[in-house]
Image (tube, rainbow, N blue to C red; front, side, top):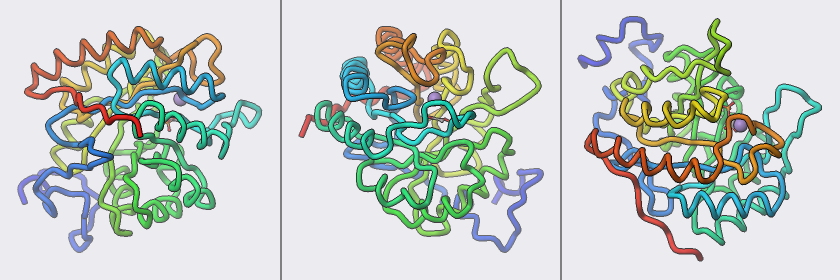
Length: 293
Ligand code: PEP
Ligand code: MN
């Protein structure tokens, strides 16, 4: 098909199944998570702390992002930290707090899994599994995610080309899980003013090349909370199906990524601004709020 021929340097061999490509499936994949559609007409907002730190922090932040317009709650319990001496996450205790936050707010939750041995446990607790940037090349983990029956929020590797990223996603689909949400979170370049360089051109490219939903994480993409609103709005203008942003009830006390975390009030304002951008590009924000169980 036209789209594939135009891809000037694809590593997809002509005999490869290419399950991620539009040539295989022309219609957009829409992923339904507890009634919230990701990849449909509406923009999805995922928000929450970088890490689940304790019960109070998570519940307070969850309630605030819920009232500010989030559709899905994020929070890491297994953290891929650069230093082994940094806070590594609460593990299963954190998963229990995420469950409680889901019950209180009604928001589905997404959390990262880094280790194949934890896949089953994380799947029991979460609505969406996150595979982080550092794990993009962890093929055994991708295969495990492909076998489980939960949608996968799959981040682009910090040094991955688009073809490498799509071939990694192919690992998940090839194991039988078609519910993959692609997420641009910035790539490493020579520029060090920002934590990463947020590659927004990847949004229309991925929307053209694949049928999968595409979201953008401007928090890790920039590393500075003051840059997050501008890049979140730009992502929606570029055609993203949603954003994932870090929000903390007390960013100055955060155990990880406080400098890139929005205050709840900033998040609430951002959602209002995104609503206007969404309308300008013929979309709207998802307003369906599942009622608490
Ligand atoms: C995260 O979202 O918590 C995270 C660690 O992001 P990334 O994998 O993009 O660094
Ligand atoms: Mn983070």
